[in-house]
Length: 249
Image 1 (cartoon, rainbow, N blue to C red):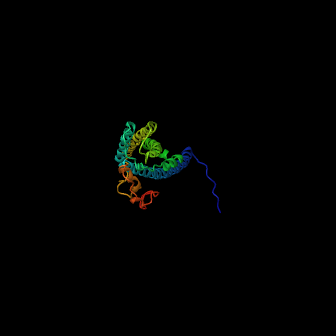
Image 2 (cartoon, rainbow, N blue to C red; image 1 turned 90 degrees about the horizontal axis):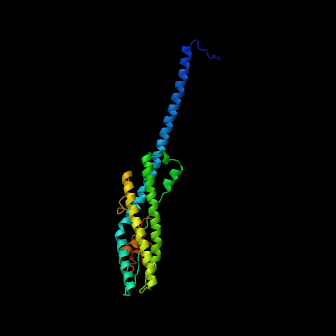
Image 3 (cartoon, rainbow, N blue to C red; image 1 turned 45 degrees about the vertical axis):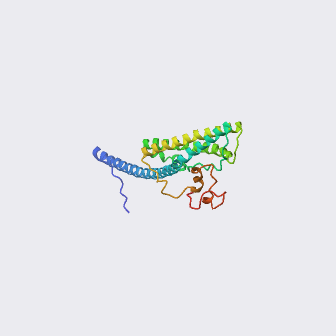
């Protein structure tokens, strides 16, 4: 086999031509590598963005379900306010039978956290990072307000079946009711803020009324008078059953 030794350039022109060819080859290789990397990063960013936007839509879906029960929450708070006013004045009042459950929102941030820790959200445009960050900050506030409201509500349920209250008990229940009112305000405000951020991101939740029921039987108690006997028809006559078989998990 013949081995051809490289020939030395005979002039500066030949030398510069060879050097130029080598440099052009390196630049082309680097450009192709960068182009492939850019395409790969774009695909990663698009997948991450789609995943996070889907999580935001699901959170908005649960917020809309909770918002649809807000009228029932207001009526229940009014009933409790009137009852405590009667108790404070020493007037008789019928014992509350069942306060019902407040709507619980299944709010998650796992996809946002996972993509952030993996560095994928850093590939988003600066405006997307800011808007999504504000969305999840608002969602965290909403989740905290929901937890605080549910804790106060659970304690407030001690009023069920009670037909007389001492002045001290009235005061304790008024404090709990004030906590529920404040946290309800924070819940409503956070839901409003979340929808404002969603509008900026052009994200819209599915219609909450178009899907399966979400604990329809248990939550329906919230929309009935708390003085009415508990309706067990939605629980197959089992008072310990939560919801119905076709409820959305």
